[in-house]
Image (cartoon, rainbow, N blue to C red; front, side, top):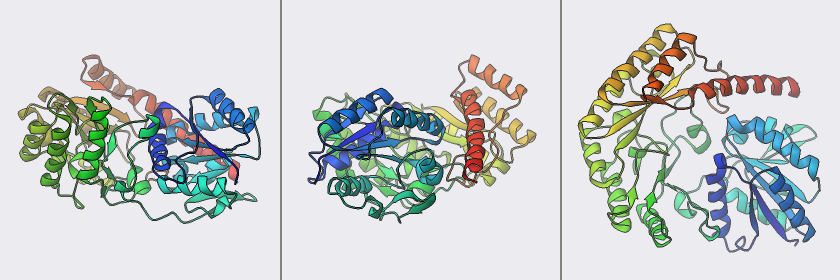
Length: 427
């Protein structure tokens, strides 16, 4: 048995994934004493690896990233490999992009890919590496064998209560994940294809346990991670308001009236059909926020149906009207440049934006990204015409629209360009 050090290639966009993986290692007695280093930037990764090797350790370097960050992280990996190559170092990539594109990820230089959820996989991998066992036997791992992709079946999906929502022993905190997976198979979204097309919920008792922990450690703001806030506790499209209230009332009891409880806002949202007088009255009773993120995506019923959103544009308007009536400011997500979108669909979306901001809503603009692992992965990148950009910039100048929609238009082109280059390289 040779000592092992774990190094996270740590960066802002993927940090919460590393916090969860750290918690998974901390909570297993077999892994608890492993040294873990959070190395921010290539120089820090190289320095940490050299230090671990000098102490006689094997080194596992973990990388996690989203699809828009893949090209940059691949370049950073090459910088690390130029600076230090050693057979005792293993680089593994995980996350939604690596899971959806294991072959191209491996060809970019990573030794292994972690496909799917990482909590169990990381435990199995560090134990196998420490004990000198075959890494390719770990469930969920993918690798290249003489240029050919090989992969193991993923482990059984976990229940959230089995693992901490972050890494408390290392002081790495974040929002408490209350739900994983999603029954709404929107064709542009990676979530149901990565985490499963069903809901898995952390129990109220477990959520309260971690809320109490955060209170004891001085935290004053409490947020939750979920693909759809009002779906907590249900397994169907119908919200279970009693379950949502049990969660919010319990956490509010634990944190007291003076601390902030955020729900239905960053980093999660509310589906428009879940915005009802009853749900808004419930939220108003317990939460601190008076803004709600509402997933709208398009003003075209044809595009919404083609994207399998599960609601129409009238539903979005009703949700906004109800939010305003109950004292909430709705922030409505719109996804511009969706596949099959034509000029009348774009105009319908822009007109809906105008009507919503007149009611008091704000618009959160995004440009469609053809994300790997989704049904729309082979679609053309989202593209906006000059007149559309002008109308969006006019809304933004009035403070009625915000978001990274302009940068995402560039990112969408880069994703498709990178996809073509990777296909050419593999052939």
